[in-house]
Amino acid sequence: MDSTTASTRQRRKEARPAELAAAALALFVEKGFAATRLDNVAARAGVSKGTLYLYFDSKEALFRAVIEESVLPLIEASEARVVANLDDPARLLRALLVEWWECFGATPLGGTCKLMISEGGNFPEVAAYFNEQVIGRWSALLRQVIEAGIARGVFRPGSPEALRQMVFHPLLMQSVLQHSMFAGPPGRPLPEQYFDTYFDFILRGLGAADTQEPR
Amino acid sequence: MDSTTASTRQRRKEARPAELAAAALALFVEKGFAATRLDNVAARAGVSKGTLYLYFDSKEALFRAVIEESVLPLIEASEARVVANLDDPARLLRALLVEWWECFGATPLGGTCKLMISEGGNFPEVAAYFNEQVIGRWSALLRQVIEAGIARGVFRPGSPEALRQMVFHPLLMQSVLQHSMFAGPPGRPLPEQYFDTYFDFILRGLGAADTQEPR
DNA sequence: ACTGACTGACTGACTGGTCGGTCAGTAATT
DNA sequence: AATTACTGACCGACCAGTCAGTCAGTCAGT
Image 1 (cartoon, rainbow over the protein chains, first blue to last red):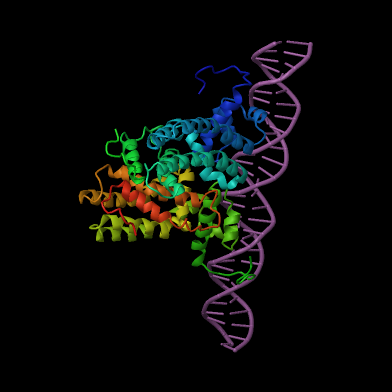
Image 2 (tube, rainbow over the protein chains, first blue to last red):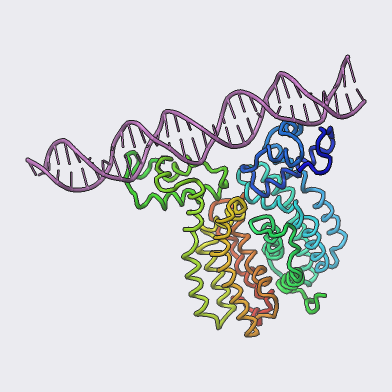
């Protein structure tokens, strides 16, 4: 509780917003927006509620900030990776999905997806922003890879949007479930063979030619 | 608003609980548990808040009732179907998933899944009940069909649990998304070719022998 | 058939507690 | 001493839960 530095009051103007946002993300994901108390957010960040209001105008502004700042850098990295590797769609798809899982889905950031599913309806503008800047861009990326695969004859023909859902939704659901009821030990490392089975399944589903030996 | 019978006060002891539960399900799914006002639940059911408390002890009791009563009949029907048709796993799997979608995933009942994802953490006992009586039984059913398919050589070998997730999670996610931010016109009928692509994909993913002509 | 006493389903104003948001004051830093 | 990051007691709006009162429906007595 007061383990590390404990007693004396600290002044750290730069670090506060990020710490508050991280605390808020954790509690929003765990309890939901309406059930999260700002006193608890502040306490978890090691400050008082008044301090929270120095950096965020309202509870909703805090929510917006959590969503908006949590999310963009990763997408940009992935976008760069895609344009550089479109010539081997199967390998690229695998790399993208592993990266998504390790840098996003399996981290606290993955909680934002559960959050938007749970609370998006109550914050239409935030939902629209998230849909456009995160879901939209990430989906477009996956579709692009799938289309490239189809064009090269590596994947079978089919609706890229529908195939994208088949490919991505199992992993997304995995992330959502990790942040819900039964997370078990937090950061459960996914059953060992999950990714093997997963990629084998989706590559077969895509009709990829070279599915024989996945390793 | 006061279209049908309108003004006068009615006494309908039998119908009230179900009407209140339906209203509560809709609002819980739409807004979340904490953000739902009992005045609104009562109003949507056409009664006053006092009446709600004649039939439910508390807001949490209402939540429990909504989850517990929404859910069991369907499972039992599906369980009966499975034991009767284990000899054609591919067809059975398809029938089960279509039934799940039409009788559950695409109806208001499907909202319970989103609800448990959103709020399960705040109601551990309800979550445990749901996990055991709904998720557990339904998952076991799907695993059973997949195992039968593997045993007969219709599906490739693999972890039945992992394969179950690959098969079911796209459909589940579809249902969850329908009850979240972007439902569009409520009851959006799923893009026409969704099921074709979906079954083609999962049967390929399962390495089913007879995938050539899905129609 | 009609009446009017009676029951209990239903109502909605009220209350007590909770929590988002404020601000006068405190103490770390310059 | 001056500045300002930070505190926490406080306020008012809001809402779950209550209860004294109302009225729709029933039926015994005529």
